[in-house]
Image (cartoon, rainbow, N blue to C red):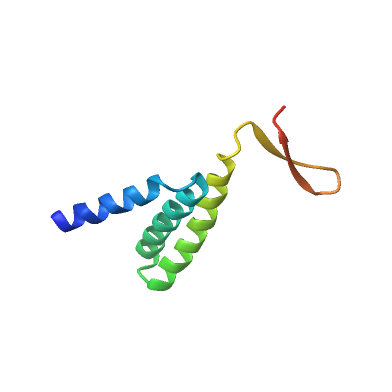
Length: 85
């Protein structure tokens, strides 16, 4: 029990010093791996879940880094960031 507590404490301490994007990626990948492994009961499913969760977590984390900015798309399909309206 003490060993598990130490591992969880170290993981939390590591995540505290990360940027929101890094935190989102780590949490998303971990959650995706657990869900993917549980659903498929296979290491391959866990790997796919980790990749998908990591990408989703990174995108969500990145969106919180620049508060007050939104992503817009122009009429040609290009995206850009500007102050939210």
